Image (tube, rainbow, N blue to C red; front, side, top):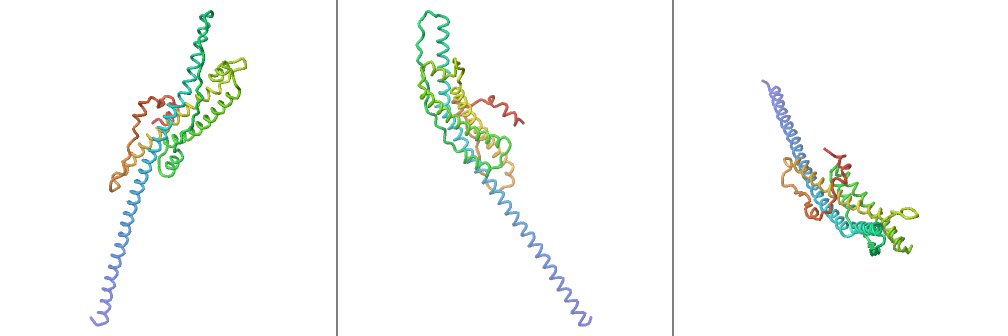
Length: 274
């Protein structure tokens, strides 16, 4: 082999070694970058799930606070106002029955008490709850529907409370006698027809309070279920512990007997039956 041939052979060997080194380096760089990206994606996913679980915990706290506020309103104001109307209606009914059964007997004493105490709308964090769910939590279906129903009930309750205040002002300005006042208070029929605005309004207040209680509870229960499903879905994927989300303990409120029955909202619940 002459000198030029020897040089060509050496050049070919060097080029082959350089190519192999380049190829190895390129593959190493590619898979190294892919591995780094996989680690970053995994970390981002882990952080995303942790953030959502923390947001669910915050939303559950807001739901519990909202539900408790409306249970207190029902206990202290809405239900007593309704019971007062029913009491006056029962007293009037007993008086009329006594007159009918024994017209010669002196009439029973009838001096009803009207419950016109001011009902102050509850200050609840529904706007914060709305932002928390729409912006940070991926809940859907019944949970979102419950949130919309809650927001609607809160607004309707505020309107009903304001209307009751207007009716109380009207009652005072008209200076009604006892009979007229009773008719106004319980919505009984008069010679001029029936004005049932006040009892209808109080009934509406109680219905909207119940709706606020019911839908904040439904929302909390669905949030807890969503958190459980989210943790189970990502338990094998994520390293490290995930925030725990415990369902809301409703037992203290259940003991009050003030939580509305599911039967009242059976048609709404049927829309989401499994």
